[in-house]
Structures are given as structure tokens and as C-alpha cells.
Image (tube, rainbow, N blue to C red):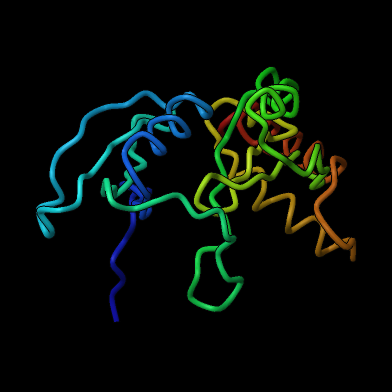
Length: 184
């Protein structure tokens, strides 16, 4: 049976409350430029806000003016979204806790994930958000996934619990050697 091959995330749509709550959070806190707004073509009472998360793709929010913000966290059950993770630069990551405090947004503080660092917090409607910052840059011609795939393979071969910086460094070294080797 043949596959349907994904070429990346096109957009993610969340149910929001009123328009201003979405504007204040997605553009005001996370700095995602507002791209455009139009009616939801499936429900005339709902508006559809479009934001750029930084890579030219879209995060969209359905809003209705009669919806009020409810910060009750989403259920952690099968079929429900656990969290959304957004890539940030090291400079932004290093300032994130302080800037979230300026917006009175509680957060986990910095968490070391081995191959990346994370900070978690909830948006005004209870959705868990992660700010993620890789601990490495892939070599030219490779992606983060290329490095992680190889680092995982090395981790498993060595019997290690999780990907650590040594696996990343060794994977980058191996990938760099591949592109530096003369063709025969």
C-alpha cells in the first residue's frame, strides 16, 4: 500500500476565545506577526486569525466574540493535543523566563532535555506551550532530524538511556566526515 507523503506542517488551528485574547497572546506575548483574518468559511459566526510562527507557515485561531477565556488545562487523554512546541533562538530562550514573568505567565523554568532545552507554560485557554532550543546546529547540508536520527542510533548501540550531548557531537562528527570525504 502506498503512502501519502507529508512535506511539512501546513498549519495548526486551535479553538480560541475572543479575538483580543488571541491577539494579545499570539502576537503580543509570542511575537508571532498577525498575517490576516477572515471568516471561518464553515461557520459564519467564527473568525479565523492567521499568525506566522517564524518559518512562514501558519498557526491559526478560531475566535468568537461571545467566547470567554478559560485557562482550565486541556485533558491529558488519548486523542487530545498534549502541547505545541515552538523553536526559539538561544538568545530568546535565555530571556524567556524573565519575559514570561513580565506578562505574569507562570512557567516551568529551564528544563534540560539532553538534545534541547525547554520551557513550558500555558496559554490563556489552557493549552500547554513549549519553547524549545536545540543544543546544536546541524552541519551544512543536513537537518536537525539528520543529526537526531544518527544520535539516536548511537545512543541505542551504546545502551544509553537518552540522547546526550556526546551523541550529538559524535553524530555531527560522522555527518561532517561524510561530506568531507573525497568521492571515489
